[in-house]
Image (cartoon, rainbow, N blue to C red; front, side, top):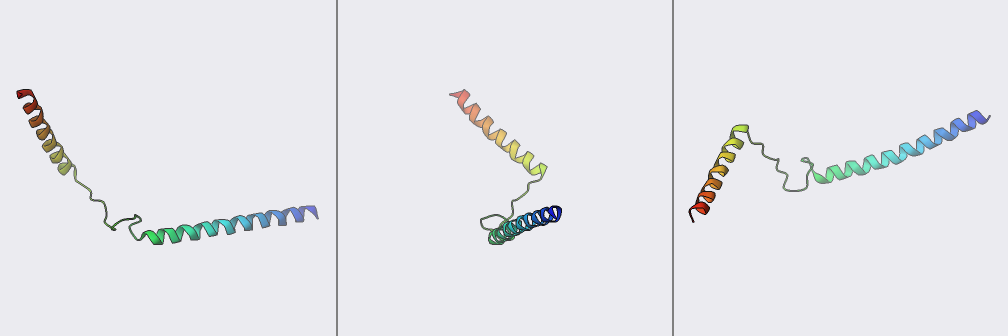
Length: 76
């Protein structure tokens, strides 16, 4: 009899835990739905991805700009 009672007790604990997890899952689903399809708060735009070539061009342009600043600083 005690084995059956302990099994039912464990069964009840597991059912309560499942209920808690289902409630948490429901809350998370509602939060995700509120954020929208992008999953981020904001205007819903996706982040832009730059190619390696584009990043290299931007880095080269920035190096040229800094070179001008350093040259102007050296000249004065």
